[in-house]
Image 1: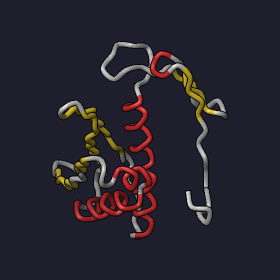
Image 2: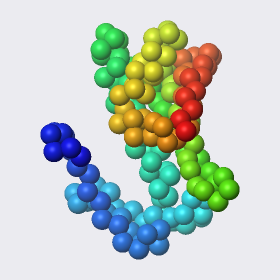
Image 3: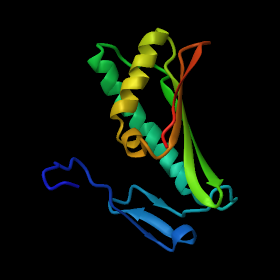
Image 4: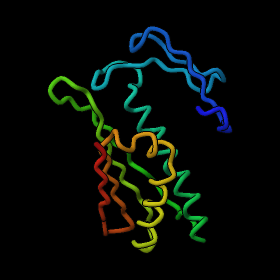
Length: 151
């Protein structure tokens, strides 16, 4: 972080033992046993945590975008996040899909909100240029796809 940046919040988590250990936040709000992706372990794997964090943050960014557009997010707003752990020639990387449900909004408005959120969400910014991302917007029966490929 640049010394001129003004930090708004710092998440602090202590992890010991990797995927066979435990992770706990300094405020006690998070206390989990990590597990490996695809395992039947009792814990939560890091890809699930990433999907949960990104989708929650993205919905917050959509709320900000909607207010700037003098709109509101409708009841039933939801985001289904899918994070794929991929392996190409022995190199691991991620792909992501976000299905954004904005029931009842005009499709163009919903698309504009999702597009604006993708530009401002800190998770979207952090992955830009590193993760292939597809965003699908659902308003009712109509689904559109905004696909951004980041290499």
